[in-house]
Length: 531
Image 1 (cartoon, helix red, strand yellow):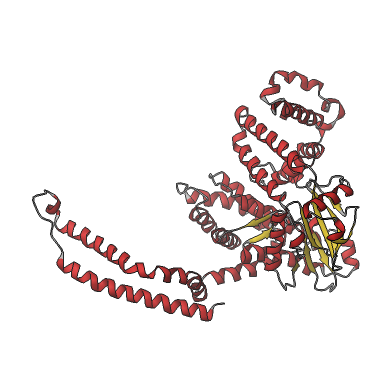
Image 2 (tube, helix red, strand yellow):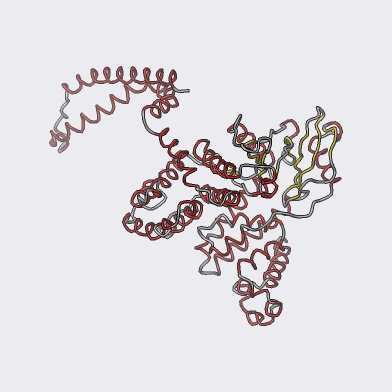
């Protein structure tokens, strides 16, 4: 029965695509292949829509199809490694703005989630929403103790709507891979899987609250970024209660100028915040578009960022961090050989790829970039070009890197709107170099010992036996080589290496003592000197 509603929905989607001049998309599908002659009767043939660039037509079609398809387009815009530039650049412009649902309905949702009347949780709850988006809307409220807060409320029946449209997207992806030869290069099934995972995380407001709490802890007492406080007792899976913050929208540059804000410092601080999140915390806000950022102007010459909406975050492991940091440093030193080697060493490129060929491809992409002044070089687009080049060498782009690349483009674009002469490399280089220094040397070694010392000490009692087995196996191997006849026939008794065996006990004892004393001293040293 589910297939009948899907069919009607698919027909409606096809109608919208035709309406926006995307005939080639619809009539290329197996379902409509026999109806290709209808392209001559398409509305786009007489309403002029097909004259628009294809990126604009795709964006407008997604906007008409509704909020879930807008969300999908926004996610797809991060996959610049597989999308043509003209389409990706248009998808970035998709705006997640939809009419609000009833404030009275929002009030009932809050009461049901808290299992009590609204007046028992809030002194005041504003029925008129402050803002509305595809997944949720936000209302102003006041806690019983007088604190101003905002209440984010999930849209009613949003789970059912998303389940319906994502299921249809999965069906379309399966059809695309089956009937379209070029589909596999765009990995439609993988893209839908990523979208489903991302959208379901956004539907859990407890998850968003946890992201906000983590970011707030990372930037506690920071002069660069302020994260609002989460009120956990009133936060549930479908409602989020957060401190209300006041500031100037970062996109309102004329007002920031009127307020005397130091825009150069504000732009540079945005870059520092991003790289600090990536290389210090391994955890970054991955939806830093202008709508999610305000500016505190209490001290205009030292302005502070205020972030909201924490539904999308990115994480990086130590291996990812090193890959990125060393790539950036090698890239700006024009050490293309090192960039190529790093891709292979990290495991992102198959080891059978010739490093010299990959190095040549990177040089071809990067050398024209360096003909421009550093302030005109786009960090985000440089990373994108590296990904696109690497994908030709069978590099599997990791989801965390596509999120990071999209966020970097947002941060960079925003910074240059604030201050067009922003030299992003000059601003980011100290953060990268500081991180690299912390990863090598005696202090880094002691830090690792402090982290791993307790585990090593826990395993210390097993070491004598492990060392004994290793030495015993080595001695047996040596004996076998020296006495090959011992295994030639079962009539010869094996030679017992008494001398080696008598030495093993002494070796095990002294090795065990040496390892134990060394580990104990290093762990104590690390605990005393590294905090």
